[in-house]
Length: 152
Image (tube, rainbow, N blue to C red):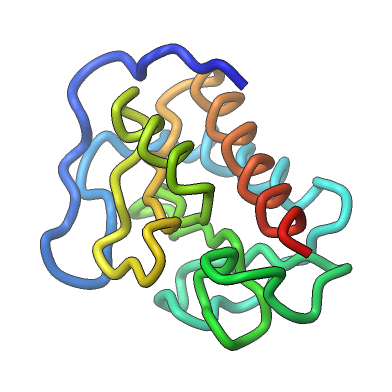
């Protein structure tokens, strides 16, 4: 999917764990809409993240019990967790993508590499600031879920 560059400066992010977005958070209504749309996607379930603070919500694939391949989960060696949504005070998303696609999103201003990447496939996606960005972030999440399934 072709994406236009994200408009404006990149948000500030933490330099120490947990990796989070410090400004330009999604407005609560936009964030709530994104969360609802993510958990309305076919084939996903909501759970507690295995690797992120308790305010995060894990996105699990109902049809995948084991990682499809290295770098396809934020929780290597555990139940596959390709995406987790951070809390409303943060509004960023951690997810996995093919390295080249993630690097493209970094160049376009939508992402940055995860601070604690094991495989180079882990990225932080900035929270959507408006409804147009909500659609973009949702499409990136859908790409991540497809990537997590594709290596199977």
